[in-house]
Image 1 (cartoon, rainbow, N blue to C red):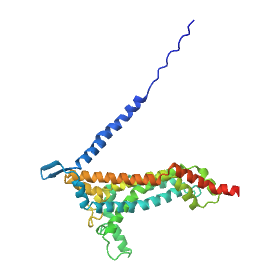
Image 2: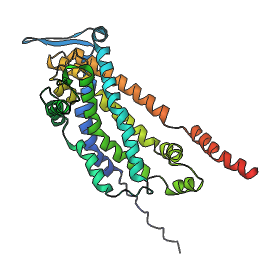
Image 3: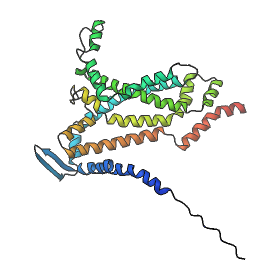
Image 4: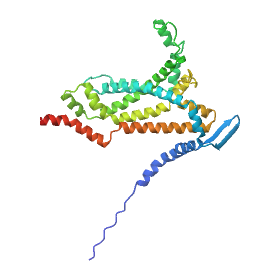
Amino acid sequence: MAKKSKPEIKQVSYAKWGYIFIAPFFIAFLIFQLIPLAQTIYYSFFEYYRSGLTIIGPNPVGFDNYKALFDSDFLKYAGNTIILWLAGFIPQIVISLILAAWFTDVRLKIRGKQFFKVVIYMPNLIMASAFAMLFFALFSENGPVNASLVSMGILDKPFRFLASVSGTRGLVALMNFLMWFGNTTILLMAAVMGINPALFEAAELDGCSPRQTFFRITLPMIRPILVYVLITSMIGGLQMFDVPQILTNGKGSPDRTVTTLIMFLNNHLYSKNYGMAGAISVILFIICAILCLLVYFNLNPTEDDKKIRKRDRFKPRKEALNG
């Protein structure tokens, strides 16, 4: 008798459901991001603006918009943006690293950690516009800060924070620090808590000091999160707009030393100069992409670096055993 052939098992493919579920994202990305990005790059090579009620263009002008951009105060505004970002980011990352190390150190036995986490994260929930209005009221010439400093005898007369370059830049940096250091602290705490506790126990048994443990174990192990924090902070810093815009009423005073690149872009969009606005957007995109790539490839270790670091880590122990 001939053997009956086994029935073929039909393979069920669920790939189409994956494509269906991710389709809304790609459709929204195509309509609201990719197409506008392509149009921005396209119109950056055209003369396209409004004069009164008359729309001029679009007339192709090649790279004239980019030449006019670098003949303007673009580099000055780029410098303002970098200064404001660094003034807020450097204390932010330092304080966040210290707080993350403290809150995750089991030897300190800090009580009420959940309460402190909520407190340091709360400024991140406040809108930047509300934060700027609050600081505008606090640090105005007749505000409570000046009144307190004068009453304590620290100042002879009220200090005009918003009339001095250092005062205005300091307020912008302080606001950016207060709004974002809580979010950075939570991210770094999560990264530290993901490290194997056995590494810290071994370091303690080997007699490592807290400083050595932090720089030799904690920092190298949380490097991916540090790269993420640096890149996202850099992107946010280059797009800084709402805080200086509201604090200086869109003027970037004094003497446009607080005018950022996005404020400069907003001025061209407000005047309906789409060609120059497109050129600024393209240059900003290129700067942001280059800086992010530099940060990623310089701070992210390659496989060769990992092998060298692993070899150097165990080299003293092997020498001690052989000795």
